[in-house]
Length: 403
Image (cartoon, rainbow, N blue to C red; front, side, top):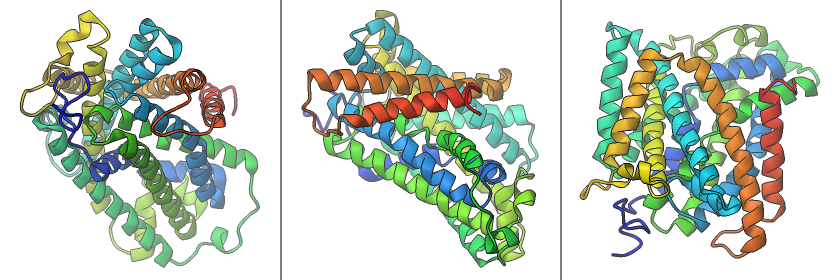
């Protein structure tokens, strides 16, 4: 039994993932259906400087991403945040609370995306939304049960569709006649740019999902940092290019007031219908739901090693290497939550939960580096401090303290 074949604990997860699929998984988590609305909101706050807001948000997210990259090489385990916090704070109780919060956030986020995606799908398929939610939730759970390679391969296909759609919109935007705000841009409003940057930061939350896959990655000491940083860079580039195209192609007052900003960019550049973007939004939503099911199931798998009452989730399928019970519970939870709960409101709470976890993870790395400086991948000592301050600022902004 070698490290490349099974997990460190020998519980059944299998190291099958390489850099390509892992990076695609990270991009797919971050480039979700939200970009189809977010661009308009950001332009409403930052105007022609919206691309700068996306770039700044990527830079703000970078320190925490680097912290996760180092910790994932130190402890390449499922339920990574729980492992990091347990090591950093010497508290299994705190680690379990963090892990359960991450799993719960994954379920709620997946449910919110599932409901939103079905909203797009219902416009294309004349089927009642509850039936679509149940059918899609079941189908994605079955895909997640099939195996990690199969799940992430499906996710990679959807990610490619999303990227091609965004590239098409970008090309259309640069082909359009430039609007007045682009030809004679106003000076920067730093208050608006700061508010937009805070909003954009949440578009990059998703890189932390990658480390929960670390136990299934070949050579995690090399692959994990590369995948996390590549996914963040690709996402930042895509968002920035789309924002450039949008501020160039459509009057800012118009694009900031619509719920279909990218459709307006496409129509401005091509003169043709943008109905295909609804299908791409469905692909983005499906990708997001599948990613959350896969991630949250791995969190439960890892938590099962830390608490006897969760040990039932450490069983993985002998051949496929998937945590079967955890995947069934998470997939069922996502589907039921999408049908019954006010998931949009709850999804806003999950952003706060994730930022709190960011705080703890950065502090954990600060403490761990003091005790054990050596690691397969190391970042400078100031990086977790920068991540801590960035997460704290985002948390305060989200809570309305900074606005």
